[in-house]
Image (cartoon, rainbow, N blue to C red; front, side, top):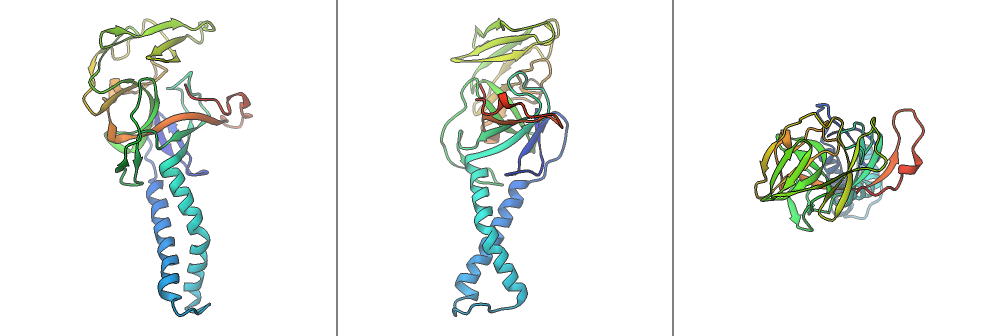
Length: 271
């Protein structure tokens, strides 16, 4: 499941399986913040050092006024978006039934380390992904595109996936039919370590990239909860730690098209 960027509050990003180039909103926001901050600094320490109010040309004064107004807002948004939380929207079904089309989610940016905007350089280690985490990451062969999947394999693991059964380091992952499963919605409960979550297996006889996979050091093996409809590590390979964006933690809105919001999903913790 892939993210492409759309303009919205705090640069809310949309997630889909289609190949769409994304606008580098982090770069735009960073540049605007730096430019407005430089104007404010110049006004305080250079242009206004004589203590004169209203000095300079009309164009300069207009620039100063706009910079003074927007700099605090831009800085606040940049800090929140880069280091705390970033909102995303889900428009496709490769993470069903955990995430539905139309879900708006919060991603915790500091879960796996603080990274500088634009360069994505880690400046502080704060944690590592655990098996079962739902993570957002940048696509290795095109970092301008973001994906969301569930971590199933940690560095050094050996995984086997055959006929919809997952084996990790020789131990078969517990998989049970969901009590509310139906023919039209074949849901199962899968347990990864201490974490239990739902997955979809559309066709038990349908084979999707069965095989044995070894996770390199510094990488993570990820899969979608909609196992027969997900372009994940079976296709794109293991994900380098350097490409992690954050952990998906909570649904803050659900709205699909022109339909009414699903109030029951608002505030739901992502398991």
